[in-house]
Length: 268
Image (tube, rainbow, N blue to C red):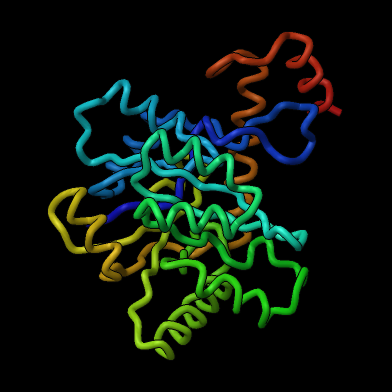
């Protein structure tokens, strides 16, 4: 069975740059994400929005019978003593766990300990995306490798070299301890065109077996790596959807003054 274990929807919040524009990080509707994933051969589907499960809940509200869908989230956590953050994926969670983890996410160690105590499968997404030498590399790896039971070793927006480096590090670390690493793959898509193009493949015949065997480390990753053209397509795909929203397409949450500001700024 295949699943894209890193994908975003309209509910992923706002872009972290040019905040005054109130441009969203993603404009994909949750139902459209599900449809795109199924069309590209995904057997089970989830959405990992930034610090939010509203996209998952919206989909399940419309499709309560979807037994091939589960709630997930990408949590932005911070190291308590360093200017360093990490993105932690939590899979198959409840609304209660979401509420509690949001309270704890200012400390990555406390957040991870809570997820472990609740029996949640969690993973470190794109391990080097935020790492900019804030601490020695050996110290960083010494902190994150024992902290996580699973690692994203193929991210559809990251370079092949990044993905292969992460995979090599994780496998070497796990082998030295005689354990089987849990490795996952996901598109990290913020547009519909990338959904399901990078994925995790696990033996099973239903959602429960997929998650059970994923925990057991029986996963293989597949699909595309990232690159300059793919990343540019993602970025400008989101920008295009922002522009479309300014002239009345899609959900409308911005006031006319805010939309006018966005149009003038974009034209300039």
